[in-house]
Length: 244
Image (cartoon, rainbow, N blue to C red; front, side, top):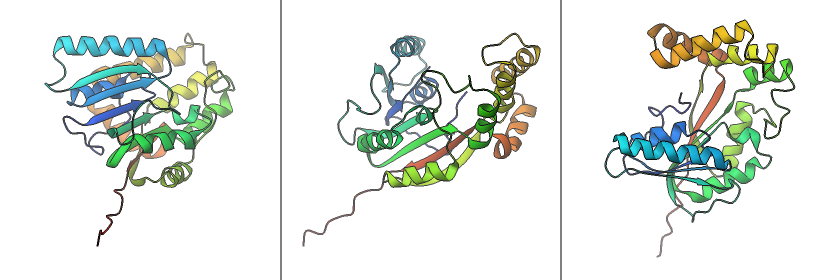
């Protein structure tokens, strides 16, 4: 289940991609399949080990084209172990709401992104996320949990202040908002509640089968209750200095 829409965020074979806070690796895997040279970085060592295993399995299965590479590594988003201008593309999906120093993370992403490069940022959307916080303290008051809810204009301001130029936004995963509302209402750790189990089966069926009816429904509902807000931006080229 991808949050970044690659029709709005084009990726070319050979692009150097950083998936920052990659988690289970969903966006890193898609970039690898598209022929990119991918680095998946996360602070969670266990998840990085799993991502590395999946990269190896994909390579063995021939899922990535010739020239594509994939590396999984543990690291700190506030102190990225890369030189300036190392990447053509940076993706940070559902991460910034966890980090106190979000300005510092954006500064590091801008540092390692080459001029003219592209960045995709996704965070939980304000409205659906506010419902979750209202229904359940346990949803966010956990170690490593969500510490803030972004409004769209607030996130875009952060992006501009970091020196990036936003060029597009959208919402995603409308069908997932009701699932999390149910989880919060019945208990975030209670997977046995009938409404939660029933809706989870619907989501699994939707992800596996991708039926037209739910695709159309989600597209219609995304502007209203999309669970994620997605923003795309570029790093401007430095002005050309006239030697004369």
